[in-house]
Amino acid sequence: MMLAAMASTVWADVYSKDELIGFNRDAAAGGKGTLYGQFAFRRDAAKKDEAIKEIGWMTLQPGDSIGFHRHEHNEDTYIIVSGTGLFTDSDGKSYQVRAGDVTIARKGQSHALANIGKEPLVFIDVIAEQ
Image 1: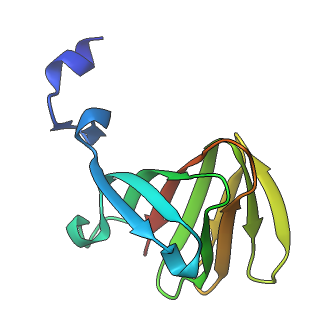
Image 2 (image 1 turned 90 degrees about the vertical axis):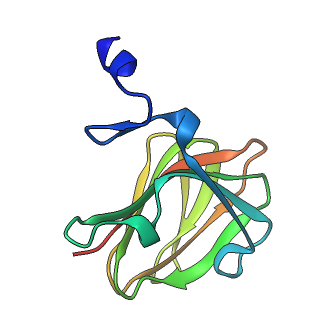
């Protein structure tokens, strides 16, 4: 494809998967295991005048989780790519999620996510702030 040949790093907001920034977090938000991440950019490099502050591919291994946490100043969206998870919302209600499902924690809301399947839970995480 012509676009891929033109870009080696970043071009017109296209980020090459080979050049994503790896960042892993143990016990994310008090959860279990390790949250593995590969980011186009992280919050510390986000532009103040743009809503998306962080975007990345995330992976939780079976049995691992992101603990229940609140988003005071931003919104957090998970787009489930593969695997099976258990998403918990602000009210403590849990929902089974799988490929194609989308979850959103709005500003002031809380959420958690656990891998309840036998394969890695892969999702895209988008943090936005107005």
